[in-house]
View 1: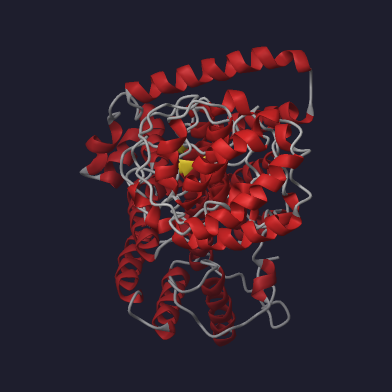
View 2: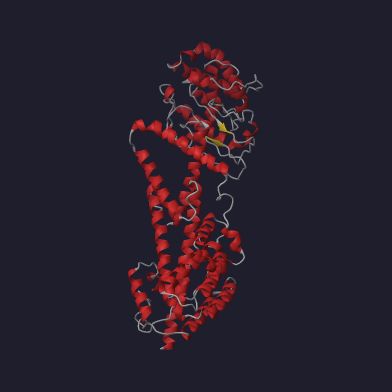
Length: 194
Length: 394
């Protein structure tokens, strides 16, 4: 499964928009520039995929810092207001929270009863999965509040979008890089940069 | 086990059954022979079999749902057990079909029946009909809603043929079925069924996942050898959802399909996400270095225009755009030292594309919807064009 065409188009368009507004013809240091580029890339990616939870979370996280806001505003345009206000108690209705909490209590009770058996393979495996799930929650934007199955779904979406982002940025680099005649003679034309 | 299990929800009505005796009598004899072998349950020896057998005979001819009705009415130990076994054995056998070797009786019954291979075969054969007939089981829902510890021998599959007698081999089997009715809709072909057997820990997990369409309510039948309370059922449904998504992720992340085990797959996924994020960082750094030399305004409008055209365009179109991009870039070209530095960085950074550069294919679309590797074909085009451009320049 790979990113759809419209996704990449919107992505590219907004990225260029952001680059134009935020970066071009401004005197910034290298690191500032890099940060701005990354920001526009992320925002463009999140905006292009508006159906997913992580996109909303990403934009919200980014807008928390005040220095980003102007850039965000310029890229998102009208959508800025819509996207930056948190929806519905952070996307998890109260009922679901209660359910999750009770489920965790329930499993905790069960684990308490199970402790007498000591450490066995199944519990070790389950523990390993739990720690990794926690790591994954930190990686995926907005993943903290999700339960396992939706976390996996968001990860899937996120991986696809990340891949598209990497590819697109790579293309941009290739398209915009000025060729260095020292590097490119007949022998090296096959191995362009490396 | 049978005594405990035979206490079912007593919501039966007394026979509205239409016995189909011919088949049932044949089975009855087999049953009786088997029952005689049975040492576990003296209650099922011939005399009660006579009494129980007649009802059993009647039950055998029943469509499964009506058998269930009968089951609950007589609260005696044998006949409910028998009848439950009969009604549900057909269901059970459906799962056994795939794994005839894993035929294990529940713990209580083990001495009794496993040796009877002939009946096993027959049951397997008959269970084929059971699976085919499952759509007809629509009319069951009299026990809907009662999902608690009481196992309802819920005949979701339609053994409307005189196939119920299959479980003749296993009158003792605590084959209880329970349908996790999350609603009252019973639609045949779209049911996802697992069959539950309470208490026994045999791990044979057959799953007749016949889920075709999506229903508002998912009927799940617990698998054999699993507990049947609502918590575990919900957990199991949840786990299956998670496993399905995990499979998708495995396909997506390269190199993950060989790995088995949740934790390792999660490891790989995490590594992949982290590496992608790092790549974004590096690429943004490169773009930052490239940036000052590029006049973005012109490029931006040009690329956007091309993006609109690209979807309907062909390879040449994308190639043309690339060439124009080169033109623009070279127009504002300035010093090159920085790029050398960048390229040095790149050589350190493991990048998947180097191998791609070897191939100089015909130019592809800049954004090609068909290609699976989004960046790679256009990268090819870029490389080829680039080399062409350079040759012309030089």
